[in-house]
Image 1 (cartoon, helix red, strand yellow):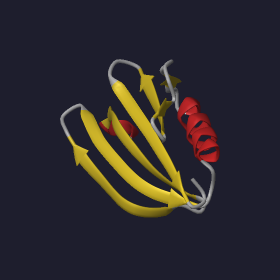
Image 2 (cartoon, one colour):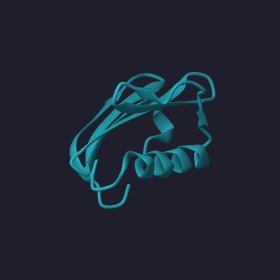
Image 3 (spheres, one colour):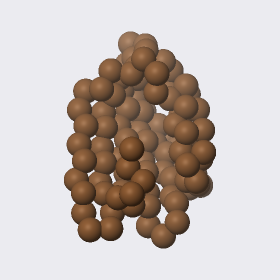
Image 4 (cartoon, helix red, strand yellow):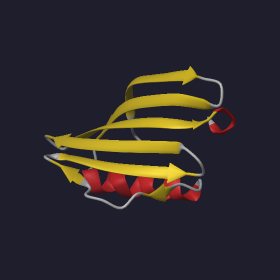
Amino acid sequence: MPNTSVRSSSVDKKDSLTNVALVGTVKAPPEGVVDYYKASLEAQGFKLVPGPEAVGNVTSLDFIRGDGETVNVSIRQKEGVSTFTIGANVAAGSVK
C-alpha cells in the first residue's frame, strides 16, 4: 500500500508453498487498507472468504486462491494510524 512504513517482513520458502508475512503502518483508516488489499488480491485471483470482518477492534479478512493458497489481512487503528499484518501461504512461483 502506498505510504506504508514496513515494520517487519519475512519469507520462508517451502517445497510447494511459501510463507510470507509483513507488518506495516500507514496513516489511513482501516477501510482504506481493506479497499486497497481487497482490490490488489482479487486482481491476483484471490477470493474473499465470506464471514465476519471484525474480531473485537481488529478488522480481519481471509482470502483463498486455487488449492490451498491463503492470505489473511488484519488491521487495527490507533490515533489515526492503521497497523496491519499480512500473512500468506502461496505458491513459491507467485511470490513477488
